[in-house]
Length: 182
Image (cartoon, rainbow, N blue to C red; front, side, top):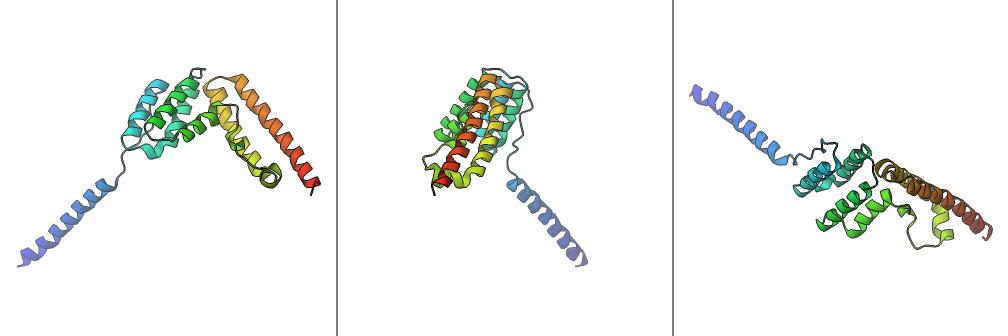
């Protein structure tokens, strides 16, 4: 009888350990490591495979990883490579067409995505002017990364920078005029 009582707790502890191991394995999400290569084409292949095998929630991190890799070998054709990757992402259902366009334009187009919208400047933009300029400044930083550091498009980046400065001036003048007309 004494032996049965000693075995029983040991069996229970063993079963608890086994159940905990099984539960830990079941709750672990798939490994979603970053690409380890410095070759953009290879990295994109790795990311596509990862996105297709359970890592779609890591899209933003993977996109950032790809930008970092491209910064190591900047060239004009990187714009096309990112465009093709974003089109593929849309085709796979990872992004909507609009989301893919916004990713591309935020980094590789001189137009500012944070300035889009149909609204009256006096009633909408002026009360939110500081926030809008802050958003545009952050986007200009992304454009510096995409246009200058990834694709070596100095002209494109300087056009975006000039556009930012012009919008800042026009916005200031518009908001001053709006305030004066009240």
